[in-house]
Length: 440
Ligand SMILES: Cc1cc2nc3c(=O)[nH]c(=O)nc-3n(C[C@H](O)[C@H](O)[C@H](O)COP(=O)(O)OP(=O)(O)OC[C@H]3O[C@@H](n4cnc5c(N)ncnc54)[C@H](O)[C@@H]3O)c2cc1C
Image (cartoon, rainbow, N blue to C red; front, top):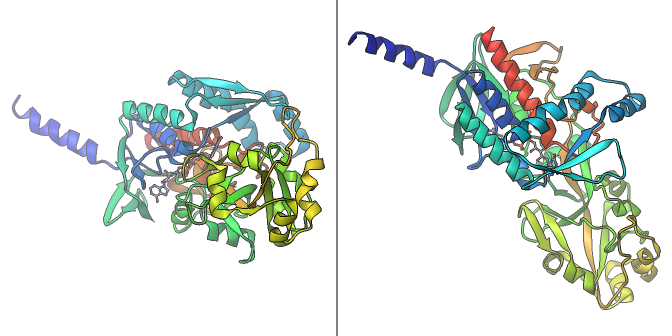
């Protein structure tokens, strides 16, 4: 009996030190991938550069669009059918919504008058609640987390990949890259869109969505797909508290946007924010939203960096232009006085909206082109395996979530700006594939 223990200890030691699955990034994609790999009995380590798990999902409502079969038919009729899109729509309900529901996530339906065949669900507790459920499931599956540990390099060998973490080198049998998109990297977006330096551009995404993981993969032979597909918003106002970041003006009907020429900027009055290209097309590519005295006291703007709303009048103190009346404001903005009040003649975009009435002093907040989401990224196959430029599988390497270009299923035509669900679906798929490949 006494001779059995050292042997057993050695077996355990070897099993524990055997290279397993390394997941880079602890956002929803990385967490979903890790849960799958660990549940398939592979040692799984998640390296997360920040001190907290959850990535960008901690910052938003995680409103999720669930298209019906009819919506899939509609999309297929409008564009080429594609396997990835079909898979996404057909598996969203079982693989994401039901999976999270089984973990305890509660959902609330939202009305979708624009596309009745696409259900909109919002998770109770917002994106942060989804993160709690994913982290709990990952812990239960035996995943090891390494917080505050950024991966800085990858090296490929025949049977494994070496992952560089600071000065350490970790051997992995499979590496899943789930590092998010690049919409937080203004220079990268500017370069990918070929935007001139004099076009103002704000960051509407998290600063850690910088594309560094995409670069790690490119350095070991991966390819980037449609790198210029970036969703831009038109409703960003410079955040007086965070240099280069945006606060989002969300309610186009409580105020009236005008452009530099003094024309009413109607695109802002739609409920969707992804009208950045309309703003880009405007002379000087900038515009203002005009608020009267009551509105500036009432409304709040969404701050990415504050992870919540900030009062409009606080934003205004830093970046607003105030006028005693329309003439005074027009003079300061250098537009015609009629331009400042022209928005009052435009009916509200939504039937439930109150039309703005100019009361008292007026304030103009500058609207700037703002990054929202990078829509594509690393080229993967439908099973999450990384592909090189010739379409050949790169062994041991996988990608998921925004790093893998979530819009990939849509062939770069996003159905909605929703991405947590795509991150989770592609994360699960990559985790399952990595585990199955290791078993083989
Ligand atoms: C303000 C805001 C609102 C949003 N609203 C919605 C919404 O309503 N509905 C919706 O579906 N989606 C929404 N999204 C988008 C959604 O949050 C993202 O699409 C989703 O989080 C992407 O998941 P991911 O795991 O691919 O990447 P991320 O969530 O970005 O996570 C990537 C993680 O990787 C880490 N990382 C990066 N590089 C490294 C490295 N080298 N080493 C180690 N770790 C690294 C990062 O720190 C991060 O934690 C919103 C996003 C924002 C910012």
